[in-house]
Amino acid sequence: MVSFLRFFINGISLGSVYAIIALGYTMVYGIAKMLNFAHGDVIMVGAYVSFCAMQYLQLPPALSVLCAMVVCTVLGVIIEGLAYRPLRQAASLAVLITAIGVSYFLQNMALLIWSSNPKVYPSVFSVGAIRLFDGELLITSETLLTIFANIVIMIALTLFTGRTKVGKAMRAVSEDKGAAELMGINVNRTISLTFAIGSALAAIAGVLLCSAYPTLQPTTGSMPGIKAFTAAVFGGIGSIPGAMIGGLLLGVIEILGKAYVSTELGDALVFAVLIIVLLFKPSGLLGKPVHEKV
Image 1 (cartoon, rainbow, N blue to C red):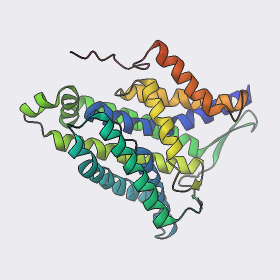
Image 2: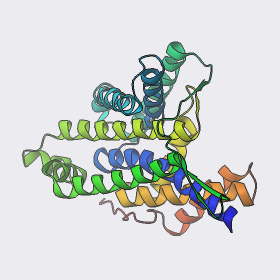
Image 3: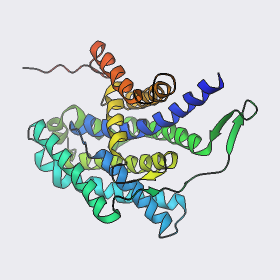
Image 4: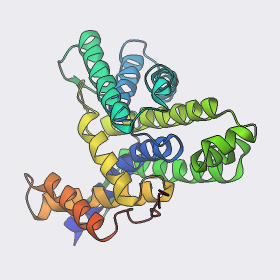
């Protein structure tokens, strides 16, 4: 029982990281209707920036996270303006190929700047741990921070998109860009803001990911990015609650699969569950089916 609880809590912690990354995917897709496959590499950039801020500038962890958020926010806006905005009316395949190109560009830039040598990421939050069941169950401060950050971000984004003027503008752009523009909404600025928010979330996710798995290298965000995209699709891409639920379920499935089935088949089990879910509910758990007029 204690072992199951340990694996379950670890799965919730890992799933919280996936959920934060998936929120970036789902916001960009929900509003701009494009898949930003370079999102995982923005995670990597955020982790490296926070690492350099702590290691070389000797900044406290909180300021290093803030630096990472600022850099990734600017990076997200630049990527949207230079790579995606000119392709706003292009075919989805052109956008997809561009996203892959941006991903490889960021990875190779990271190789040039920081080299391929793995770096040990320092802990950003360590104030002890909670011990339960006579010390058999240990819940670290990093785990609690990750889960808490996921809940706070989820609530904040839900309130932002539902109750603020800018959030309502995002929802309007998501429904119909042309109609939103006729109502006086600046579509380009709204989409840029969406990329900025998604990239800032990627920076936070990069810090939390490297706090839990402290090996940092240019490919750090690749696999978590793919899994987070899977989580977004699992929960219903375009749905903020769906991204959170999909991320948490994916994390729990992965950890329990590796613990009770096979460490080699843990990742395969995650994608197998996704395929089964999509066979019965193609729009995801909380996604709404889209009917196209022809």
